[in-house]
Amino acid sequence: MKKIYILPLAALMCGCSNDIPTVSLGIDDVYYIARMQKLDLHPALTGSEYEWYVNGSLVSRARDYIFLAQDEGTYDVELKILDSYTPYDFSFVIHVIHEEIEYSPYIAKVYDYCPAPGQFINEMPRFEEGDTYASILQKAEESISGTNDIMISLGGYGGYVTFGFDHTVINVPGEKDFRIWGNCFYELLQPDKKGGSAEPGIVMVSYDTNCNGLPDDEWYELAGSEYNSAGTHHGYSITYRRPDPQREIVADEDNSLDDIFYIGWSDNTGQHGYMPKNIFHNQEYFPKWIDDDKITFSGTLLANNAEDISGNGSYYVLYSFPWGYVDNHPNEYEDLNSFDISWAVDSDGRHVELPGVDFIRVYTGINQYCGWLGETSTEISRAQDLHILLPSLPNP
Image (cartoon, rainbow, N blue to C red; front, side, top):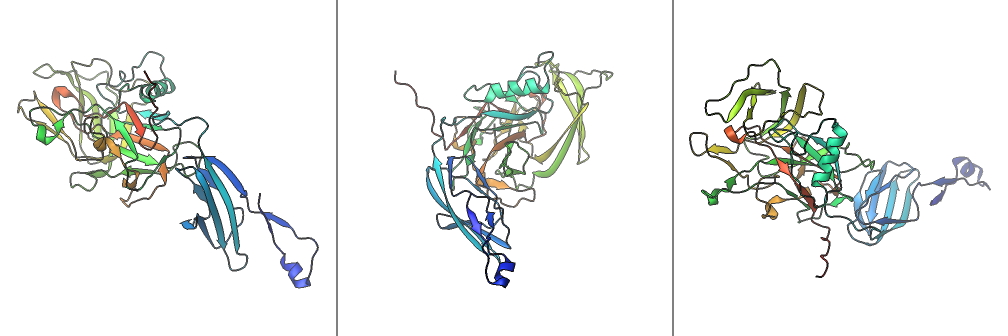
């Protein structure tokens, strides 16, 4: 540790002293860390103000500083503790090296999977008797980690999944930072309108500020094209109720729905309704590993995007929003399925500059039911850090 020699006030008053105590700054002279990994620096000494410099540029005025670098190299770091009585100025070196094990560009861990009720729940991933939250979480991770590309459903509005990579995704200025795959497609009757099966999911991001490896820091929304639209409702909340076993089961007239009053819901705008059960998916729609009879989700609600262009409920088109949402454009449109960390805003809609993100959350952003098509539910199958090179294919 770097030692700072301080002459005590008593010694100054007496004019001399042979016993000069040492005080540790709590920071080493030299560090070696892998690229895209955080170094959490906590100076032990206090002052009225702090300044951190990296290669001569001021990077922070906070007491604590998290160093994070995308590129390998040697970084000269300087900490100035500004204080009228005991100012200090310390310099040290951080060597950023290549990781011992190559990073994967794909999802490495699923931290949380909490879908809302929906026609694909208990099927994507499949619930089997005896499954618990832990085993369903493992199934979700096995489905979307790496290049497994097995679709999971988030159910109706609010259902979400939280995942991360084996490194921090760097916020590179002027570039998209990560990409997420869904199962959207365009229908062929109106090709210019970009409509089909868009089921937009909202993206949240979090930076591991406390460096504990858990998604328990503040979350920020990536503000997509609809964030400031008049039809967008911020601060929305909805509660789903487990189906009442004593309910009267009523089918619709055209026989596509065999339980109209299946799962009841109510929201904080005073609206209420039901998620029907259709004839194409006969399993239970309420997550079977959840013991509670109610599930509540909160977030931003996007405007409904569906239109029944047939006029009789036989042909619904779900139109894509311009940009900024998951499962909103077909996967072949890479740019429209990629996301910029610089879009992050806090709960008041103010821009937040994050150096990177460690956790990503996607949740279904629309509360909408489209007849025989069922509820609008976001699906995902993979995510990729766009700043990590893809593995090279072996020569044939």
